[in-house]
Structure formats: C-alpha cells, structure tokens
Length: 197
Image (tube, rainbow, N blue to C red; front, top):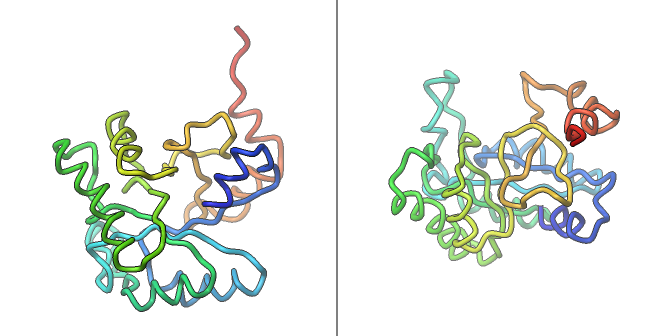
C-alpha cells in the first residue's frame, strides 16, 4: 500500500496493482508470501492486533471454520519477506455501531500496539467488514493513518479519498475472471464514469 499510495499521489499508478490481505491468516504467510516473493511482489496484510495467534472470532461461526491467525513471530517473518503490515482494528468490530470513544480506541490503539510490537510504521488501515462512516474516516485520519481501504468495488484513482479507497475482491465468490474484467478491460472506467452535467 505504501508504494501504491505514493504512485497514486505522483500520478504513476497506471498498471500498478496493490496486493492486500485482511485479518492476518497464517495461510497468507505460508502460501501467499512465498509466491509473492518468487515473482518479485510485495503485499500489505491488515491484522487484528488483539487476535494475534488466535483465530477469526468475528466470523468463525458464520464461515463454519476457525482459521488460525499469525502470531507475532509470524508477523516478523512476513515483514522479513519484504511485506508490509497494516491495521484492521483491535478486535474487528463493526466500527460505526460503536460509541465514538470505543471506535477511536479500536482504530488508534491497534496502530500503537502493532508499531510498539514490531517497530515498523503502521500507515494503512482496513475497515473491518468494510463498514465506515464519515466519522470513522475522520478518526482514522486523526489516528495518523495515510490510507484506509474499504470493500467498495473499484480501481483506485488519484482523485479518490485516500481514506475511502475501493478494492477488487478476489476470493471464492469473486475469482480471477472478475478481477481481470476490472483491471484489464474498460469495464471499470465505464462503470465509474460520471454522467455528463
């Protein structure tokens, strides 16, 4: 994300893809990191600071699986592989449903905890469940993050608010072909085109 944000700001983002992983699952380290490194890519993993070494408490029942999350040592291995860490809050709540003070704590304390533990800048945030409001984005900015990603579909542009960046999800429901439709065809430009005044 750091390189992606810099490219957006400098106007050199054309053809650039920023790889991101949410939650901090161990399979990102075991499977994705070696492949990324082999082909010369890096990625940002947004981790839930209070759940390190645990499992996906926020959606395990829904997905029917307890998925293991990276512990501190594994995050250090992720960083040593040339990857980046971002924050995904302290406990992965639906932030807009929290009182302002609790929302602020989730956003700011996660950044502080990860920085204190790993000694690296934590400049990027991912909204848990993709949920955010103007107030949430304001608190993310106040906490010192330079960007925040949503689950709004789309390709980021220089004109986008860096605290409300869209992403193209690639998972079991949204696979490679849909991703290619977004990035390798005019589909995305047509979809986001504003109507003429």
